[in-house]
Amino acid sequence: MNTTATEDTLNDIMDLDHVIEVLEDGSINTDTELYAPSITATEGEEPDVDAAEEWQLLSGYTGQYSYNGPVMHDSEYIGGRLAADILAKPGFYVAVPVVWLDVPEDEDNMEGWVVAHLPKA
Image 1 (cartoon, rainbow, N blue to C red):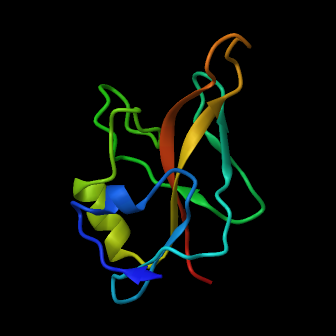
Image 2: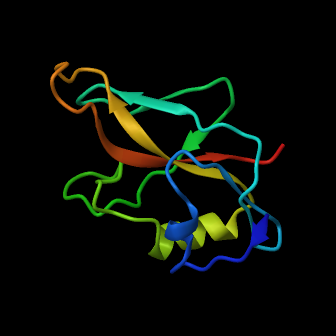
């Protein structure tokens, strides 16, 4: 299903693990057949994309102090410059939680999230 989005509404459209397609005219196709990649990380290292596809992680959008990588804090959202950049570049996008590999079993190993982009072939 195609829909329109703005910088203010894209966050509501991009549910975690739900791949969307930004079309050439800036509209959004929410009915794609792609699966979200798995994202894993170890503390102190940047996340890895665990997928056969060539997904790329978007970086430089977080407001975290002294950090400019791809992992967004749980309190952040898809809006402002991040949303504008997504809407300006056609391709597939998905917000994916980060699974931390070095967390003890009794603790939650998902904290933070990334936006992955798969350019159109």
